[in-house]
Image (cartoon, rainbow over all chains, first blue to last red):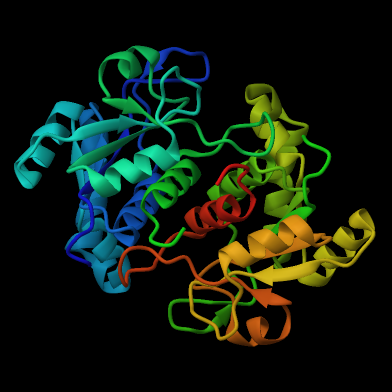
Amino acid sequence: MAVNLPAVYLALLHYPVYNKEQEVVATAVTNLDLHDLARLAVTYGCQGFFVVTPLELQTKLVKRLLDHWLTGRGGEFNPTRKEAFSRTRVVGNLDAVLAMVAAEAGRPARIVATSAREHRGSVSFSELRARIGQEEGPWLILFGTGWGLTEEFLSTVPEAILEPIAGAGSYNHLSVRSAAAIVVDRLLARAR
Amino acid sequence: MAVNLPAVYLALLHYPVYNKEQEVVATAVTNLDLHDLARLAVTYGCQGFFVVTPLELQTKLVKRLLDHWLTGRGGEFNPTRKEAFSRTRVVGNLDAVLAMVAAEAGRPARIVATSAREHRGSVSFSELRARIGQEEGPWLILFGTGWGLTEEFLSTVPEAILEPIAGAGSYNHLSVRSAAAIVVDRLLARAR
């Protein structure tokens, strides 16, 4: 890894998000979300990836998964996956993420939330990309599962909300796996 | 959808690809690959998404999945997923894809393969993006499952091989779901 990479962390929030009926819920962890975002984080030189869930049973499940890949048979079977999960942690809430990032980076994180919906005053991809390259981090980019992070959360927590990914038409229902890949690539890819 | 969108098709090949031991295999279909690529194709205005597998049982499985979302309970439960799968088809081999694309578009497809490995003479993202905008299609972009499309296939079939996605360092193990999202965004996103 290059020395001057900006300090960027990713977090996948399973709460507070909407379900299909716009109710506020905690979603279940999806195994492939963890694989895909862990691999994405390492590929783009992110400092860490946090799986955030308030549900204790889900936390246990993720810990078992990480254990399988980090110290168990998984890592022998596929060392690249072991490397990917080496920067993945599971925590109960965003405060825990913030505490860990601040402790590691020596400064509080600048929180950027992502959303598939339009928000007044949202930051554009090009603007955020420039800021990440110029301003001191650490940056923490939040992704919501289910039908997205709640409006209440978005209105109070993040320092900035990133503009939604615009496709070709009005259909805009990417998986969080696809959306995270596109967001991270747009913000952090070397060549543009 | 805008009228002047270039005609682009995506295909996910489950054969001929490598497994972890560099053996040539046909991989099993992964449910979430289909969901993610179908949603991606519709979001970016692609004309179609082909799931390509030579295995009859896998074909049946995919057909059952499509049936669930297109005519069964799935479409009622989540109409946006029904819309995504409306452009998804499962076929046995690349020739069948080419025949369907040529029949629909009235011209043979220009085949572009993707790979996580470097290839001499590969086309860059910016060059291919420009060509897609300028030259007549249809374009067919191939993604390989497993550990990627075989060298033999890459050396004979496609008109061009796209350069690999470069992350921040030497680690380069994105899922095909993440890679496809990044490739399609780089080639087809409206704003750059």
